Image (cartoon, rainbow, N blue to C red; front, side, top):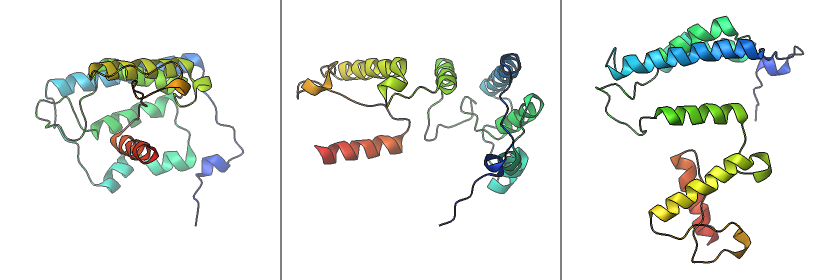
Length: 185
């Protein structure tokens, strides 16, 4: 079996982290570009679908260059984001017919940004107590919505009268988790 490791991982050059001021400027610019994109999308500006052959999209994004050489900075991220958005499916477009995924809302985007920047997983409580607490609250809310008893704070005394759960980030993982739980039961 061959393992391909990107060249930038083998480089002796340290990966530089942008200053907080550079990050703030790039982030504000990215948020503005996203909002402009979403506003144009909502009024039906342009095509609803951005389909193109894979080779063309890879070339437009210059993906192989960025993976092999790194170096994306405040100046290069702007045109990259524009090209990325040009090739994204416009879920809010009036002519888009829903396919496999729902239209995300703005609060979900904010939550994804917070999650992405804190990177506190829910799987291990000590690594993300706030995220794990929110998962617990959301699962209890969902259990109560279907008429089941909320999960207990201590799972070592759980019984058949109380529900429990775990959040997953996609349907495939949800199905696998369900199959594993059923097999375990």
